[in-house]
Length: 283
Image 1: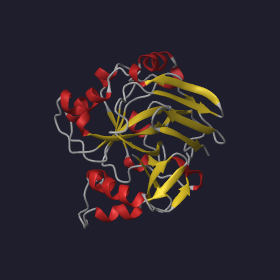
Image 2 (image 1 turned 30 degrees about the horizontal axis):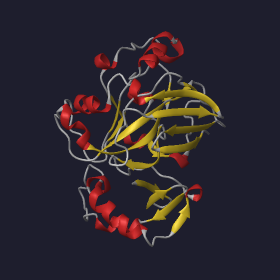
Image 3 (image 1 turned 90 degrees about the vertical axis):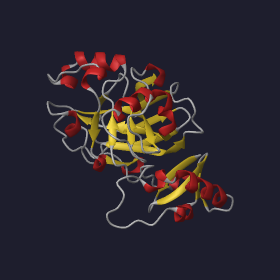
Image 4 (image 1 turned 45 degrees about the horizontal axis):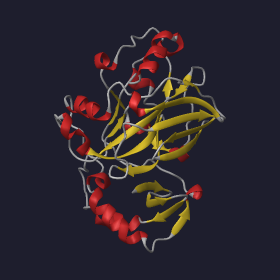
């Protein structure tokens, strides 16, 4: 199933270029009060939401996908976990290009580990990207994002994929400079997620997906997830050896070679097989 959040926090089932409004499926969610949960309630209750959405979709109002304002597929992730330099050729370009590394140590992911992005940096594809520091180079980075579906702590590799609820496309927008990664990548709007969530039962082989990013129609990044240095299962093992992942947490799996600058007026198109494509405008 492909689920999107759109317009004024409505829930939709995506079928081709149409969206079926199944917002009423959210009525199955448990009531919450202060202190509110630190995880995403919809993802934590996804089986019940999907069952209700299936029923409602038969008679639901249908809209054109192109007319919808797409929000991030997950509303309230507790954490955005990101994997740096997780493609060999990107590691090589980051180590050799001073405009990327800025004298920072760029080492193998096994040495530098994962990092966190602020959840306030997340928004949907339709929101676009506002360049915060126009005097500095700001780069695009396309990534496959795994959406965690259940509480996961000290996970064994053979169980890791059981904790994935689904997938979406992510743009890890990055301002270059000498500061720590999490600062330069946590600017408002610099984690663009979309266009929707594809549930894990529909996307059963995330380790062999072609993907591509273009800027103004020019291909910048093109690769396959089989080129990941550390695959999704091992990333989950790695992450949960340090902290507990919760329903709705987002795991950004890394970007391939071809990262490059974006400026106001650019239009980014990002596509991943079996998920879809999203367009993001730069301001």
